[in-house]
Image (cartoon, rainbow, N blue to C red; front, side, top):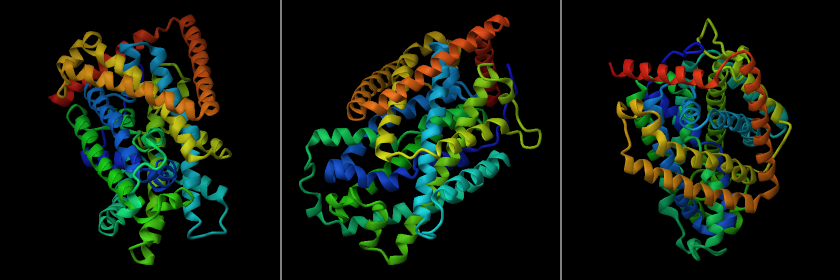
Length: 457
């Protein structure tokens, strides 16, 4: 391998808590209200539509993670099976997500924090939460996992009490007509709704640090999917049944308002606390995953060598952890509408759904040993089914996202184009030094094969 390896420190339970904390972020505390204003009571159907590509993304994560147990295995997979440029753009897109998504989560944290300290500086709170989470990560991933487990347990419990208890208080008159704005509006709402499901493939950024990845990665993805799907569908079904959909679109904290309709007054405070924890866990996972992806690319010389190092004390990629936190802090100066950001962000996820669809079909041919020896292996028929669904849903969702948010979408594509320019220039520099990206990636996949065999043994 062209750089150091990270230690396998995270077990099955810890990884599930990391993933649930990542996927169930602050968006579920905000988006259902916004999307109810678009789709009406049928907002839960928008989430059901969005669950389709989410499920097939779990299959991608399970397959890739089980055969390539290295940091940023999604990058290694795409680079090896298709082209290094496409793999690099995945990591570049992850940094774009940190630049925009991190600040929005930080400001979301600050907005909910105002419930407790209304006079506190929004900017100061946003900066502080990012800085604190960065410091926790510098202490080591074990510290991050332990804190994540506590926070996830609290906010998931709060969401389950709201959703399951709310089933007994639903006013079914509020659920009719189901789609007052038409079913096209429901389909439009499904695009930003999918933003709430993004993150399953982010597990691939930390595959190298998962114990027994060949066995555990598929289990982690499926357990996370079941937990997340149940929470999202139950919440989005209950909330429009408690508050008229016309009002939900204008409520800043729709879940707190829904809780106030049948639970004690103090429970609104509990939901607010849950929203804070959800935002914190999502920021934590952005820092964890984006730093590992950046580390993996630096290990292959595409980024400067300073980012290809780990702390002697903790064994963590400290320079990339700091880098990602700095990127988030730099983006905090920009504020955006979460529904709009969600739609544009989905473009990146769907674009890679299309790319991964093509790569899955080529997997048995390009990496035959990895595929044939995998503990978890999709049949060739399921590889094709997963590929077709990812490609079709990707094209559909990208079309809707660009149609509804043309200017931001064009800005996103422009930033991707800048990534292409950087890659081409960096490749020329490496070529002059006699370094081949293809050779480095071959070493990476060979190391992944040895790691897989070690795990099996």
